[in-house]
Length: 387
Image (cartoon, rainbow, N blue to C red; front, side, top):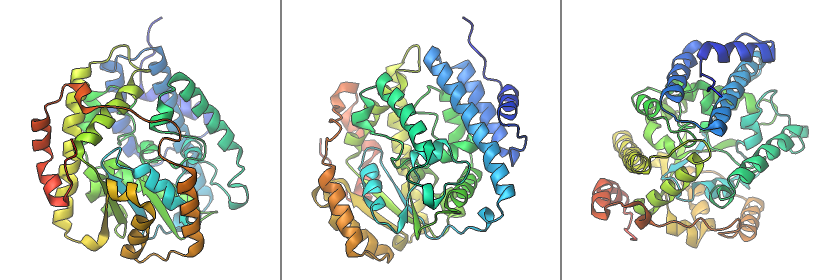
């Protein structure tokens, strides 16, 4: 059976036909969508599941975009929403950013983006039905299917309809973000993305946050994505008062975990996997994230805007870390929020969904060479070598 090509105009026509809408908003998304489609067509080496997944993902994002544009035009209050001092968690992948995000979520003052909101953002969620919205069940079914297809993912990134989700799932509506890399082998798109100014992607994200909070706002948003490290300039251009948390871990341990995760996520979608190329890309990619993040922080030179979380400090006493984080940014932390956080940690011990096991030595990497890549980062932040 011949493969179905990835054609931008065909995707746009299908989205219009499926929704009955025609206004996609600003046209800036068309170029990145074109680069993505070309890369998927030319080099992704998709198997039937990968082809189906990619087509479905692009179609859903375009349909969401049409619906979001309609809602913004019809509900004038959306554009009037202010996103004030969002707390943004970033740092090396696999450095406890997700569990920190979930922990801070326990404070009722905080609003976090959830998986069901990313998949079905329109219409805007409402406070009265926020915990019983039927879109939650629809998202649960999608994750059940994913975990049935790739059961080991549950121990790596446990997800449900009401899990917190990374920013890239919303930023993907502009098609210039890192959402597609983990699932598809698209080096051409990946290389193109590195050189882009993705300020428009963050502006699209800001508009979606306005959309999500219009009927159920809280005191602040708490957002998370490791890849914010490489685009801090664009993030701060759109969210100039953002409070940024950077998680730290021995980069070599993080690297091994990322390779294991990325390999697991790619296997269901590709016909063949070039492991040496994948390992080489991830080692270079991780190091460049940290380099760009460090350079931006040095240039900004405003440590009051950042709070650093070291992996073992968080593992040893997460409540102390969060207490200091709140104090650093001047956020109030009452006893009710603290109690909720302590209860959450007691109910979610490490390994609750199974342990993600991996080893640096599994991937043929040279320790001395990798240490050299991260020497400036480790020295600047005082990150100890553990292996």
